[in-house]
Picture 1 (cartoon, rainbow, N blue to C red):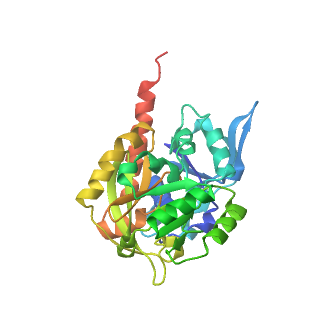
Picture 2 (cartoon, helix red, strand yellow; picture 1 turned 30 degrees about the horizontal axis):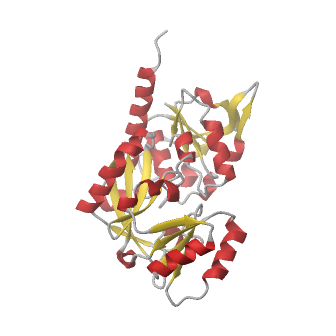
Length: 326
């Protein structure tokens, strides 16, 4: 396998928590040729096709057998490469899902013979806070709107609400508005000035203080879960803003949710997905760059990255088998 990760600079990796790091190590242990490039290195030309200036990542076998650090990776010389020559491309740059991210999906969907994880066309059509609206029966009451009157009416009905930027990530810009809070209109103005996008408003679920559950799915099948518990004085459970992870099993309700959404994820080519569940209700479906591999591995003794690469290899083989014979 010849694979490339489209992601942020390697220097930004936290080797103790980064899921992309585990994907890289597993690919190297399998003997795959592993390359890295930044989304800014991607280009589409009439004469050149889809290319990226990328570097090859290698590591000594004896180091791979232990617990490698970022400094153990040897980064090769930059080389301009044709992406059609790769077996798989992983979109692993961090959100937000903005025009920069969107442009990358337009380019990568033009690779008919290369497996892109996740399918760029479907990623573009399924932002995390919008795709989840396909399953209203699994969700808390939710509204997406730029209409302040509609948002006010929703808040009047449900009183205690969470307000999020539609294309935000990592817990940034999330506000808990209690019934007595009189800052909503100011927050609405700030959201529009900063994000220039609609707002998602959800009924507040107090069960978040017991844990915002992240469940990882591969090919629509749950492979593990963790609870993310907000830090004291917070309602945001995201690990980026201090949420603490705890071991979490899969409840009957969790399995019902996964069984409901799994077939659609498989149909759309969403090989690797993370969903968020609070109090037995689905709040987000994360398809851009889901995380949680290292935490699930530690708590459950799992190897999620191995299951993921098995699924990518199978997807590649299935695609090869479907090609018309010459």
